[in-house]
Structure formats: structure tokens, C-alpha cells
Length: 176
Image 1 (cartoon, helix red, strand yellow):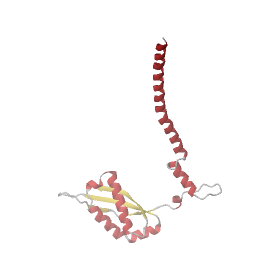
Image 2 (cartoon, helix red, strand yellow):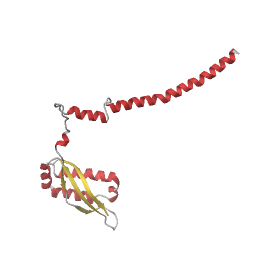
Image 3 (tube, one colour):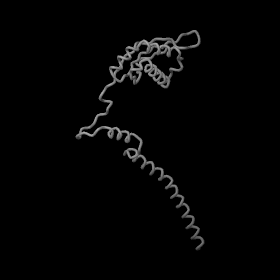
Image 4 (spheres, helix red, strand yellow):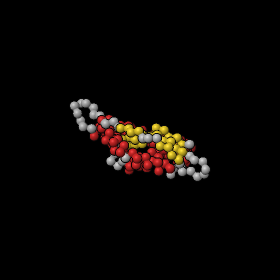
């Protein structure tokens, strides 16, 4: 009987041990995830949104209880309309494909607008020659539009090197 009691004790102990292991294996990742999330949202981790927010406030000079405004809000950007660009794209075959593009340049200041206006013929030439070499399939999707925006921004910065061009904003882009 003692032998039967030992077997039942061993049999009862084994499932209990396995249950504890399962509980630990399930609870440990949840506990670590909860601790990580708490650290993330409290800003104690050296990366993340709360840390970036803290860096902005740490960089601002301390005043007499008045909240400091971000540096970007002090000077609004300047937008310069570009003339409409209409050109054919590089296609194989007989049927021509055209692109019509209306865009604005986002500049850092009014002085940059004057520099871009002075360089407008060169800027439009660089835009036209680049667009004529593009194929319609290169313009498809958001990734194609993003690449076009980056390339036009680089070319605008090259044409008007005295100006700080922050972005190219598409008002209308039609490929047909």
C-alpha cells in the first residue's frame, strides 16, 4: 500500500509540476511585455515617443513658468507655385503617354523664394528633362510618387543652390 501511495503521489506531483511550468512560460512573457510597455510609455527607455517629447522640452530654455514653443512654430514655411509642367514620358511603341504636373515648393524663407524665382528657367529645364526619361510604370503607386518627389526636390536644390528647398508638394499629377 505504501508503494501504491507513492505512485499516486508521484502521479499527482508530475501534472502539478507541468502545470507550474506552463504557467511560468505563459506568465513570464506577459510580465516582461507589461514591464516593457510601462517603461516605454513612462519615457524611461532611451527611445520612443515619450523620450523624443522629453528631448524637445529639455532643449527649450526654461522660463518663468511659461511653456516654451517649438522652434518650428516661430517661422511658417513659404510655398512657391511652380508653373504647370506638361511633357511626354519615355514609352516604347506608337502611343504617346503624357504627364501633367502642378506642384509647389516648400521653402524655408521669403529670401529663398526670390532665389528660386531667379533660377526658375534652370529648374523647369531640369524637371522637364527628368520627366521625359521616366516611364509610366515608374510613377505607379505611392513609392513611385515618393521617388519622384525626392528626385524633383534634389533637382530643385541643384538648380537654386542658394535656396533651402524643404519639399516638393504635388497639387495635381495626371498620367495619360
